[in-house]
Structures are given as structure tokens and as C-alpha cells.
Length: 64
Image (cartoon, rainbow, N blue to C red):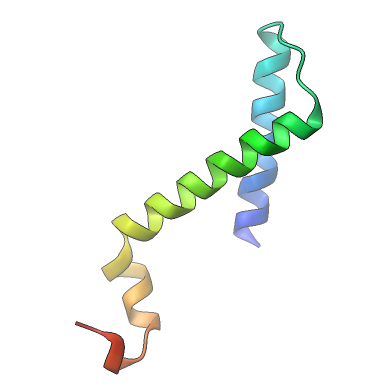
């Protein structure tokens, strides 16, 4: 659910920034930008917080 919220916020921010800078931006392009930024954010989070957030969810035989 948090990913969808992040996706929506980044899409809206991308569309808004394109509009105030004078670029013509459709919602389709804004969704592409929003999806790209959301995946970059999520991927970075997975690499930086792997031991704190994600390792406790894994079964013991996958741990280090």
C-alpha cells in the first residue's frame, strides 16, 4: 500500500513540476516518471536497509 501511495505522490509531483516549468506533460508521461522514481526509491531502500528491515522477515536458513 505504501508503494502505491509513493507512486501516486511522485506521479503528481512530476506532473506538477512539468506544468510549472512550462513543459507539456501528459499523465502517461507523468506515470512513467513516477513509476521510475518509485522503483529507484524502493530498490535503494532494499539495498540500504536490508539487515534492519528485510532480514528479520527471512527464514533463519536464508540468513547470514
